[in-house]
Amino acid sequence: MLLMRCKNSNSRRLPSRRRWIHFLIVDRSHSKNMMKKANSKLQAELEAQKKAIAEVEAENRVLQSNLTLEEIRTKESKLKVEVSLMEEKLEKLRTGIVLVKPEDKKATEEAYREKINQWRKRKRIFKELWDTLTDNSPKDLKEFKEELGIEFDEDVGISLQLYGDLMTSRKRKRTS
Image (cartoon, rainbow, N blue to C red; front, side):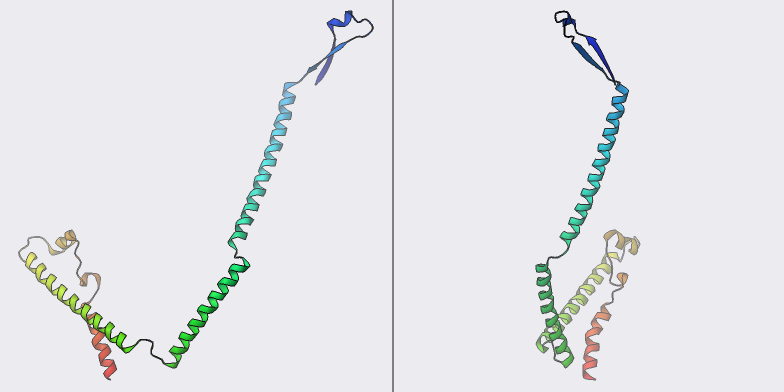
């Protein structure tokens, strides 16, 4: 920076006192450099503040994800009740108490037999219809099934005989 002094035009009226006007000549490149330095300093400060905020937010998330003491006690009491119920159930199983009533077991077996019988009937009806429809069909049967989106039990690896034999094998085991 350069400081210059000039005489004021009014200095003629006041001979004893001289007035000087000071002019400030600023080197613009110097002021730009100073502004750039100040800006970079502020940018660095901003980045540091952002980093600090991110760290505080991360710590806050960690603290919020942790359970409070009240929540821990509540959860602990619920788990204790659940464990005691399971221990009672385990003790019943160890002593040989039957958990399924004979009436419930018989009703379930009857429902199972009924469903297997319905499956057999439906499979037989479909098979008869399929054979009738495709008896004189010029199309390849596999392609026709693909077009219609039909899958037979055997195509997906299910055997009606296997499921039907489950009940008869259980009866044989009981009588032996």
